[in-house]
Amino acid sequence: MNMMQIIKDTFEDKSFLKKTAAIALPVAFQSLLNTVVNMVDTMMIGTLGEVSIAAVGLANKVFFVFSLLIFGIASGASVLGAQFWGNHDVKNIRRVQGLSLLIGLTGSLIFVISGLICPEFVMRIFTDSAQTVRVGAIYLAIVCVSYPLTAVTNIHTSLLRATGIVGAPVVISMITILVNVIFNYILIFGKLGFTAMGVAGAAVATLIARILECILILALVYGKKTALAARLSELFGYSKSFLREYCRSSLPVVFNEFTWGLGVTMYSLVYGRMIDSDSVVAAMTIFETFQNLMQVMVMGLASAAAVVIGNTLGAGDKERAWDEGKKLICLQILVSLIFMAFILPTRNIYATFYSVSGTVAEAVTMLMVVYALYLTSKNVNLMFIVGLFRGGGDTRVGLILDICGVWVIGVPMAVIGGLVFKLPIWWVYAMVNIEELVKNVVCTRRFASRKWINNLNERIKA
Image (cartoon, rainbow, N blue to C red):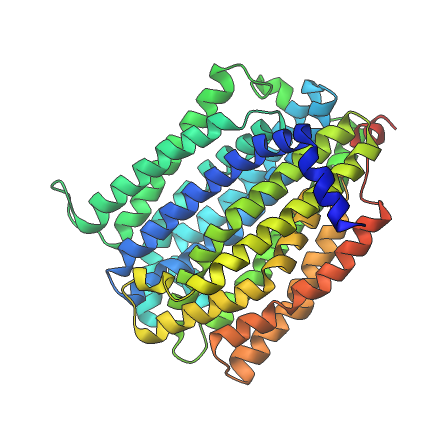
């Protein structure tokens, strides 16, 4: 591929840029809002001390695994939904909606039960610090109640996006995030006559926001009579060909995200057992908030890619999908280089926003340097796996790559670096990310083969 020619073609194709931006920017903005509120949460909780930061950070690892399961279900639904929408097949979109909700709600109950019945046992999986376990269990037992609401919200939001409704969910996110921040301030610190609840207040604020968000999303779906405004009977009744294609295209995404999330959670188990574990976990919690902030645009592009490619293939235009794929990779590389140029000169500033020790601040700064060096590889892999391959229905390749990357390379590297050689956290993080370089090579070859380009409508009819 001639990169300069692709760059030229990308910026000359105004229709493609407009279509991609119409999805990517609202998705990125929505993710940005969520990341900002997480950052504000961390700052507020940070005033309670490093143990509280570590406790909430580790408790949220449970939500991280759960959210990846739901992200997998929602992304899998979006793969089929985008292609069905390209063919204006509302009947099958509603079947995808129903089956995805059934799987998502069932999965969420497992997490709710464990969080309510044995929160301290769950926390001990991540750390052996008694104080961190105690504080984290308080937070987890409250916030886990919000998980089913998150499942309903995220699945509907993903399918709304696949059917061209992107802006309204962003407005809903803005409202609920504002509510979350306000209640955080009131309940954590005991304002307006309320008793100061500390980390429990942060959990209650999150629960209130999730309830509101779910109500507003369902009001949008049914109040505006969208393609997802289905009667109960329309959510069920699946043909053999539909179930076969759902299992073939969507379930690998679900399994991919969940097993990848479990692998990434293993990193947290290592971090929670390294020397000076509370400082290590606090540094990673602060750094990951920054990392999420940097990821909003690239994740927005990847999400847009899945919809753009899915709609194009649903309309039957495979050659156009190949051309759009090259342009999307080009955009992802350019965005990554811009971010790298921003991070490296400003790396010393971010940690100063938090009330932490010099040791934690130094670790955060070094983690940012490592992240910047791996940034392009990480983001291009994200575009390949989450964007192009999923949009093209080639979901099993992403499953194999992510599982092998985390479990064969990442987890062993974390154990060797963190527990065997007892290296500083930034060196451990650098070792873990070697997987990105390996995936980069394989993804590029898969993309060039064009085997990722599939019309799922044709496969169901067949």
